[in-house]
Every structure is written in structure tokens, then in C-alpha cells.
Image (tube, rainbow, N blue to C red; front, side):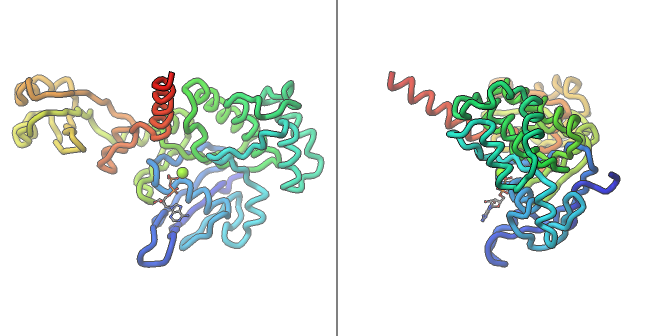
Length: 330
Ligand SMILES: Nc1ncnc2c1ncn2[C@@H]1O[C@H](COP(=O)(O)OP(=O)(O)O)[C@@H](O)[C@H]1O
Ligand SMILES: [Mg+2]
């Protein structure tokens, strides 16, 4: 297939009334070649879930055009739905059902005839065959994720959507899921559109990435193309007193100096080369923290948007909070 798996042109999605609504997607355009893994990378609230909702026909389009698997999202939504699978961020499994019963339910919902051979194949592929008749409530997080992906693949879709597939997972399970995404894409030939706010995830998994912020695509390309857009290193400096910006900017090799939260971002051709002059220009007792960042998708994001992406996710903080609560109660 040479036609793109997904094509989006000038896509705009507004929630609420024109004038005082939220513009969740603002004139978004991209094209995803069939058989690739495409990542939509952006912070919370960027518009990632909205984009999936619009492309899967759950939400309507305010302006622009979109085709998925060759079908128009506006006018051929039934055809779109029969050619796509969706792995939602929320849990969709029925805990009281076995793995096989969950597959059966999915087949019923989609009126799939002869689903059993495909279900067996998927259960075997995901190493769940021996547990097929166990209730899902007994499954580990990793097994549940695999089953969710199996459900999404049951009707042999051309494209699968994964909305933040690894959010809240521990590092081990996250790595396992990365392998699954790559494997599924190779084994079943599906195009994958995944969303994430994890930079390493986009970097590790995606052939192409679109960076999205406040509903706008701010950059697009392969991970290495994106990284090549940033020239030089970033020195992040936190001080207890204001710094002498003109003096720092005058250091040979320093490209620019700008504030970012309570830090200063100093861009330099090579960080190591400017550090001695930099430290001479900032009183040592005022330095709280200093770190060097080499070009990465994180610095690309910072450069393009003026803010950081890779902050702690709130989910983890909530878990930490509950863990602390349990400690206190003991
Ligand atoms: N149903 C809705 N009604 C109104 N605003 C919404 C709705 N869903 C999302 N939004 C808003 O649209 C923006 C994008 O949200 P979302 O697509 O969920 O972002 P992401 O998935 O990247 O975190 C946010 O400002 C969010 O508050
Ligand atoms: Mg979301």
C-alpha cells in the first residue's frame, strides 16, 4: 500500500461554543506512511487524546480533513471503525471475564464471524494461551496490557491507536510494552499511532514524531532529524541571586541566555568549552545547581516551546503519596 495510513490536513477541533471554547487542535497537518510507528509527543492537555478521538470518529471535526486507512473520517466513519483498533488509556477489560471471554465479547461487539482462530493466534503471540481461561482479575499489569492489544487486533485492523500506552507503568513493564509495540507492528503489519508524554518512549519507538503543544504541531520528523535541529548544548543554571545576563551572553561560545522557571538556560556550542568562563562570571556561593544537557528530544522541545516536557507525571506523585500514607498508618 502506497497511500498514507493517516492523512490530516488543517485539522481543527474546538470544544464548546465558538468565541469562548477551547481550541484543542489548531490547524494540525501530517501524513503517516502505512506500516510505520508514528508518535504524537506532547505534555498533558496538548490535544493528543482529542486527536485520537477525532480520528476514530468518537468526536467530530470543527474544521479540516482527515482520512484513516483511506476512508474519510467525516463521511465514512463506519468504514474507518472497521479498519482501526484502539488501545485506550483507560481500562477496558472486564475483570470478571476470562481472557477468552473478553475476546468473545469484543468479537460480539464488532459482529466478527470466525473470530476464534484469530483469538487463538493472538493469545499464543502474546503468551497468554495457557492463561486464556483464567479471570482477568488475576492478571498482572503486563498481561492485561497484552490482552488489551490483542482485543484491538482481533478484527485485523490496518491502523491501531494507542493513547499513552505506558502511562503509570513501572519501568520493566514499560520496556516490555515497547517490545510489544515494535513486535506487533512487524508481525501484523499494522500502522501504529501512539501518543506519549515520555520523550524516551517516542525516541525508542517511533519512525516519525510530531511534537504537539497547545493543540499545535510545533515540529515533525524522525527522532534524529528533530535532534539535529538543536545546535549545541544547554547548560541549566539555578542561582540564589540574579545573574549578569549581558556578561554571560558575551562569553565566546555562548549562544543565548534565557530564563526558564527558576533556572537559566544557557545555550552554548560546546558546554565544556564555556564552563570555566561561565563559572568565573557567576559567584560560586550563589550557584544552587548546574547541569549540562546534550542535544536530545527534551532540548528540542525546550527550544521550540520555551518550556519543558519531561516533568514528573502527576500519577507517580499520587502513588508516592499513597505509599507515604500507608507508611504513616503502619
Ligand atoms: N470534552 C471536552 N470538553 C472541553 N474541553 C476538553 C474536552 N476534552 C479535552 N478538552 C480540553 O482540550 C485540551 C486537550 O485535551 P486532551 O486532548 O485530553 O489533551 P492530552 O490528551 O494531550 O492530555 C485540554 O485543554 C482539555 O482541557
Ligand atoms: Mg490524553
